[in-house]
Image 1 (cartoon, rainbow, N blue to C red):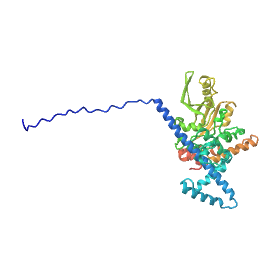
Image 2: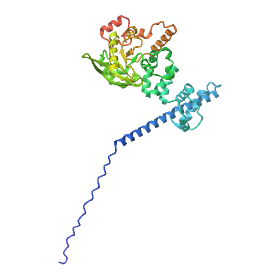
Image 3: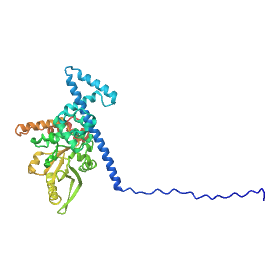
Image 4: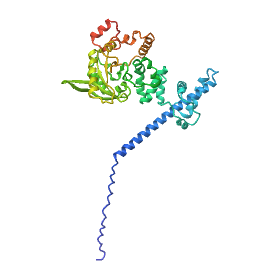
Length: 410
């Protein structure tokens, strides 16, 4: 039929091709762990390298400033003018970090640590890294250390911070808690110098002890009263900080460790292990004054661990009774001289550095006077439970009694 329209041909569409699902590749867990370790190590190494370069550069800047000042020492105002001019020119070219205050720190850094670092020739920064520097801490660590006036004390903190890997915050805390003075008071007088030359060396159990233990980080000083359970729980809640206070080599094992004897159950408050001394360290917490029963109880705990827990290749167990008030005469009367039981005081506030130094001086004079006991300034100032604690934390009857005995209210 003419003029009739032909029906349109139906064009069959080919089915759309769906994209093949991506192949599922399971990355081995070990590979991820290895790469994670590699990246973290690289970042840590880079950070350490940058810190080392910064410390050495600051040291070298200080050296050149001192040498230049010595050339112009005939003029009194030369050093001040030199620092001002250097600060302006270095800041214009390199930006922040070269203020007059910082240049003074660089100069002081060199003068205080010059004997520790061999002379380094004037080379590019890359050459500085080829020399193995004894300055192992970060610049922030050294700025803090330069604030310590006693060279022996400063040397001790530098050694310990490097050996123990203390962060800046941890170093600040150890300085604020007077770790050096507390360790010094726990040492044999003849071995005191070792602290500044070798740091804390653990050759016998007494070397791990300090007096007093400072537990300000527990936050208990703000409480009117607390129990031994409160004290123990506060320690567990902040176990990392407590391990830092305990010292090097300590590992936490258990709390309220139970053992049974003649059908009676006994519980050790805290059990630690010291990997450097290779022995168990038991800690019993006491809120009040030390008694001979406390020492006898700890002796039983130590005997149990020595006979039933420790292995043959481990050293004898050490027991520490942490108490608010220790009576040294009671300890000497109750325990033999070679006992592994020790009583130590603790306090929940940062100690007064001045009082501890005064006690060290008293201690030194006592040695010079042939062992004659002199009045202990720390005991004299802390003999009363109200002398260091605000009266507002005591009960009304305690406050009235404290005020009647002449202790002032804070």
